[in-house]
Image (tube, rainbow over all chains, first blue to last red; front, top):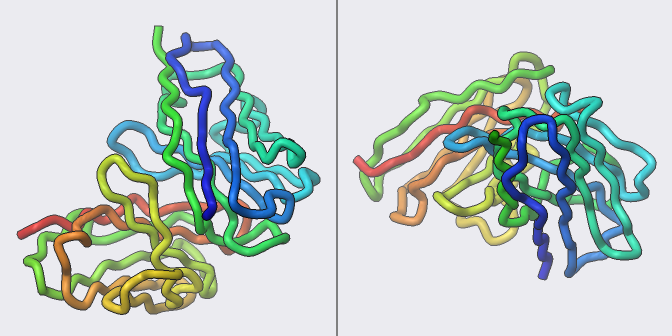
Length: 122
Length: 107
């Protein structure tokens, strides 16, 4: 069974930094592109970033480009999101999600974690 | 960026009735369109991919159609567990975008 478990969400001040983690299990992690998707309080889903199965390709939403960095450690079956220069509008539940098909970058998401809550507030 | 819109924002339906949800893309996404269901306090769940293919374990009452810029999700006979928010998502390129969602609630 595929499991994705996010952690690292806390309350942080504007301008602060935070690193989120996602522990993956139940599949061959290094075959799959992984994503971060966020959902602000009472709002819809916003794609944030992706990293290819081998870490060789990364992409970001314009809203986080230059501030967030996605990485992965396939030896630890883990995905990370380094978040710097945090803003109030970054307050959200952050989900990690798995691309459905092995290899490739483009595709839909077939498994999601339960999310970790990031609150940016002074 | 491809902008996704959904209508209506809220759909009030009685159990057993049919629900039809619409999704529109600002430019063609071919059939690279997925639908997700989200219940309160839960993560999104994949329902449909490739515009019309049901994901594993999704009941046959859920069906998707469309291509290009116009898409539809139909729930043929609403069950109590189907009251939720439904999002469409395009994956035609790496700048993935979601629609704002349609909330299906009990009439």
